[in-house]
Image 1 (cartoon, rainbow, N blue to C red):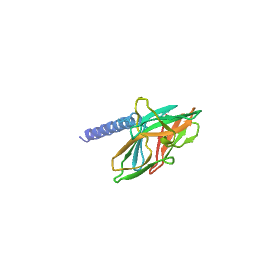
Image 2 (image 1 turned 30 degrees about the vertical axis):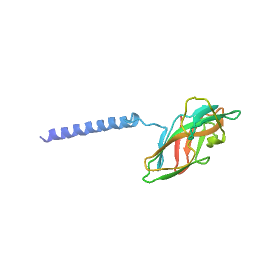
Image 3 (image 1 turned 60 degrees about the vertical axis):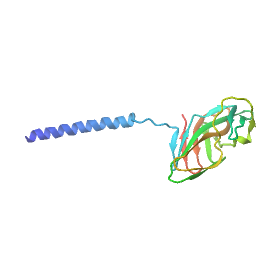
Image 4 (image 1 turned 90 degrees about the vertical axis):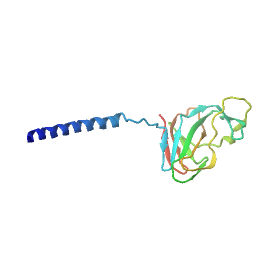
Length: 177
């Protein structure tokens, strides 16, 4: 009777080890849950970024319902980065989005700071597709509130995005492939 118990225990131990190796391998090489590499959390903020749009001109509808046109200076392009900022803290957070709030790093090592869209915008009367609002200025986000919009960067024509860093009120780093 004792040999039957020892064999059973040995068989259970071998099956358990094999089962744990299979489960561990699945978790490491093929996780059950896909994650979005452009959705990153800091200590208090979650920031979701979309692939940047590199254009010469960009039209958007401003908060006062006027159409605005952004045009890149000669030899430059506009990098439009749509983002969502979510406050995951238990209290309200004051967000300041200005030229010191974030930076966009290119693959060639240049760092670009956001600029105020109103500094280069022109009124426009064309009725093209309206895009999101710029995230610019200061605002307050309560717990689990989200702000959506775009940041504007003036970049070289050869710009290839590498990293986006949100450095105001939290530190969040998003890498682009």
